[in-house]
Length: 323
Image (cartoon, rainbow, N blue to C red):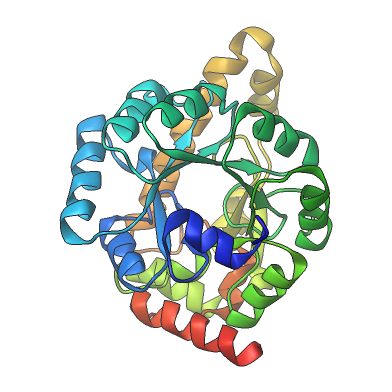
């Protein structure tokens, strides 16, 4: 059985269908992951969705009490995440199935996670970094293409997946632009072992965000997605609401100068990341379009607000019909 096949990826995690419900800041929660596991897929939650490591631990334990199945936690592994080491410790102690690393070197995470029997999947946007994390011992790479929600890559999936398949021997999980069962088939046919999908699940009954945010995913489409550096300093895909049009999508001159200053860079990045998180928090739970909502182009395929189990069953039906 090839390493990059849906069967091998399902076997790796012990799931029925090769989908990871992607970790989404201020969107993913325990209810969504529980329903994902019941539906035969897996899911992950950003550790930063919890204010403390105690809350993170309780969330992990609450999922385990409700359902048996593999799920993951997403860790920001660069210096902007001041809770990183504590979050890593909790993930290892609770022996979750996998960790998804983002925005930094995963070396320490891989070493510590493997000691605890926890797998590590690393977000990558190019072949060079993919090879690097494979050499560090990553169990899989998540190929973040330019249609991904949140922090997107620079390459299309048609460019990125073949490059990674030529470069690494570990499973390649495609992330970005998929919102239908036919889209899943296309990615798997190209050689991906699995799919990481997020935006399509924002408009789910279990998502803890405002009804306005969910409805925006229904009302807006792929043409309404723009990239902004306003939130975290790193390009991030958001819905182009009237408010986003008003504030613009580029950092102002002061933000740019501070971001390039070597002495201030670390602290400014942390500040903009925190500030961006607060903006997103207001957007996620506020009942107004005058906020900032993260999403990817795959909201094109969102036509109504549905339970997670219905979204998953529809994807599987569409996939089977496409074969």
